[in-house]
Length: 80
Image (cartoon, rainbow, N blue to C red; front, side, top):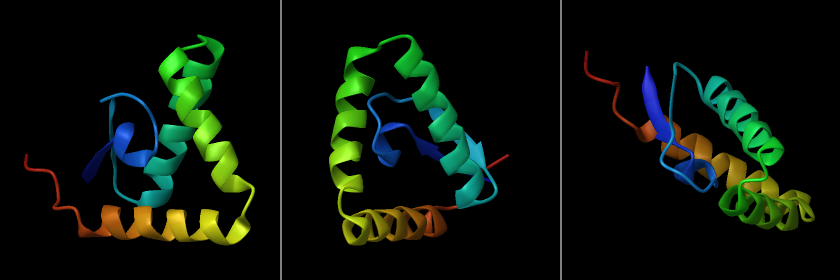
């Protein structure tokens, strides 16, 4: 199991997500983002705006996603 924070995943806070795969951690981050959107959290809304801009370019979004996956893969396993 590995840990990444909201900030590491393009968000705005230090909320930690723990998962065995990048897909799992990306889903947790997405759910957290939706929760923060519903709460109208200003910092997260700003981060979401930046992500939406990135999404305008499929190539750039793909590069971002690949870099985050590599970052996840390079992380050490959590210590028990």
